[in-house]
Amino acid sequence: MLKYSAKRLLQSVVTLFLVVTIVFLLMRLMPEEGYFGEGYEKLDEAQREAILASMGLRDPIHIQLKNFYSDLFKGDLGESIIYRPKVAIAEILKSKIPYSVKFGVAAMAISLVVGIPLGILMARSKNQLWDKLGTGYIVFINAVPAAVYYLLLQLYVTDIFKLPILYNPDRPSSWILPAISMSLGGTASYAMWMRRYMVDELNKDYVKLARAKGLREKSIMVRHVLKNAIVPMVQYLPTSLLYTVSGSIYIESLYSIPGMGGLLVDAIQRQDNTLVQALVLIYSSIGIIGLFLGDILMASLDPRIKLDRKEGAR
Amino acid sequence: MANSIDKSIDESLFEFATYDEQQAEMTGYSNYSYWRSTIQVFMKNRVAVFLLFLMIGLLAFTMIQPFLPGQKSPTEIHIDENTGMQLRNHPPDKEFWFGTNSIGQDLWARIWSGTRTSLLIGFFVGLWEAIIGIIVGALWGYVRRLESTITGIYNVLNNIPTTILLILLTYIMKPSVFTMIFAMCMTGWLNMARFVRNLIVIIRDREYNLASRCLGTPTRRIITKNLLPYLVSVIMLRMALAIPAAIGYEVFLTYIGLGLPISIPSLGNLINEGRRVMGVPTLRYQLIFPATVLSIITISFYVIGNVFADASDPRNHV
Figure: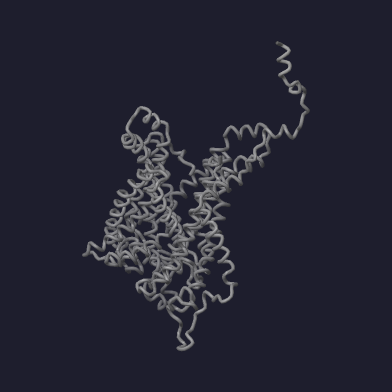
């Protein structure tokens, strides 16, 4: 277990280092307008050079990289240039993250509470009505791009139930639809995996033995199958939980929630290089850390797991 | 007593038979054909068959649509003859079947042109995924010396969130169809490689493959008869799913402002245009029409892919 964790940690650190470096280098390829705020056109060539040099962008690339890392270790992500000129990015994030986490956690709670029972129900009524309805739902959510059903939900559900179209911190009724929309994808994936793991477990021999012993179907389900099937589900939890920080790009910009997802869209559209860089770094670190925690959690719950063997071909 | 037994026995049964090569072959003969069984199993799923024909029809239609009589150009801006103004937001009627958009372009023509663009992206991404994924996956699974190297690289790359890589690549490169395809190919082949590798590792050491090798079966025959049938299901599934995924990513990238230039109609661009005007109830058709066409296409490919993957899995053949 310790050896596994150490190996896995090393892997994550290497990945993180590579990703951060690659992101940094790629961002150097961006047009340099992104480093000037208003009035890029008014500056002449010498002034531009002076500004770029003062930002350290004319140093050799390895020095830039070194400075970048030393700033990063101090927790300094740099300053925004266009989005909110001269404001530290950490400051901007501090005001955004609480909104995203609030909605993210709510959506995650909904999808867990709905998705896992749905998966269990589908596994129990395999090839019957509930299974077919659930499969239809999962196919729809997986196949159709999220933007499409989010838009349609916002369009029609707000009409039918007379809900506010945009987010308003003072009106709790305006929080319902964003949270529910955000939970749809999670619900589908929890239900799908839960069903698959349940069906896998139900086909195993120990279930036959339990039946032969004369255990009641209910206690087989709860005490044997469910316990085994829920373990692999655990690996998705850290990632989902961490990703609540990043917020949903679609939902936040659709309902004008002032969170992280909307920030990324703004930063991209206004070409604020340092902000985009900081956000991309945060998002990829979240992904890498989430996967790491998920694997460690799995390994501590299931002693059979080894690093170099991943289960399942499909 | 002995006499009566003699009489009841047909003496001819005890004569030597002449060796007939054809008849000898008959006992070991099975009319099992991989592809026929696959199609048979696929055909049992009525929904998938219906969607398959729908998609064939739709594909054919998108190809021939520009050559049909009375079709308009997807980028031409129509002018009202009476007022000399652009025909903005013209509701659907006989002239403009799906209406016009906010600058007076024919939505019907734009939807089919957009479908062409999006499907083109999807096909190329699927194809590249398959090519790179199969080559890397095969090397990974078959060449034992490369195994740990590729596993290391895979673990690093797989930890990078797909959407982030897509955003980064499209942010840096100029918006174009090539950028789209390139960015999606960079992220897409990983899964394919892993699936192919896992299957090859499972199958390569099975007894029947060992037996084939011992019997001197040529490698080509081992690959085509023993390995490929098991891989076809996975490859087809991934390729079929690459199309809805590519369309979804295209919509996503367009939404956050990194999509194709607006001069190239694509489903993502159309959805985005529709979104801008959806606040006005009478203009909602500009969102509903592209969204419906897009949903039908993505759902169809998703369902066809999954059903075909099940059908082409030899374990489901009886």
